[in-house]
Length: 173
Image 1 (spheres, rainbow, N blue to C red):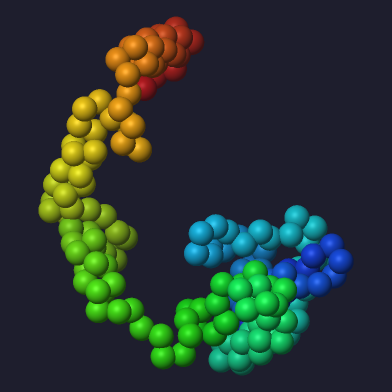
Image 2: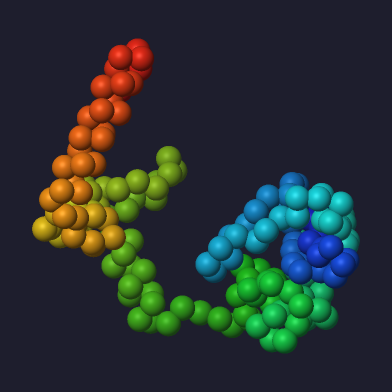
């Protein structure tokens, strides 16, 4: 089916800063990269559709060609694209190392991926509970910083006051 397209996000000077492939409204929504999201232009006239009515394979090929043409910043070009384009954004022949596969397997234990979505199994809940218990030992916050006694009391009083005011205003927990 020919419902794919390639698109570019343009800078104010008209040069592209991102090339992508999509279908539907993909070009108008932020998409994650390795460490952050690609910024979609607020001015929608700076989203340019380069080719339309493509098959997925044609769109992949054009995306790869355009990214190579303009170049990624990591390679001295002008695009912020993390990958050279194509299926899954991975280089041809790219695979996880055995060490990475083992880590992914260990981290995925206790997670159920059934048709209803992803959720923790009993084993996963225990694993998470153990992790959080260890992390919170010694009155630490979630970042591992030890919270001084006076700060904990101040936060406790502040929360009590907050919920007291909510109750008085008619809110329920």
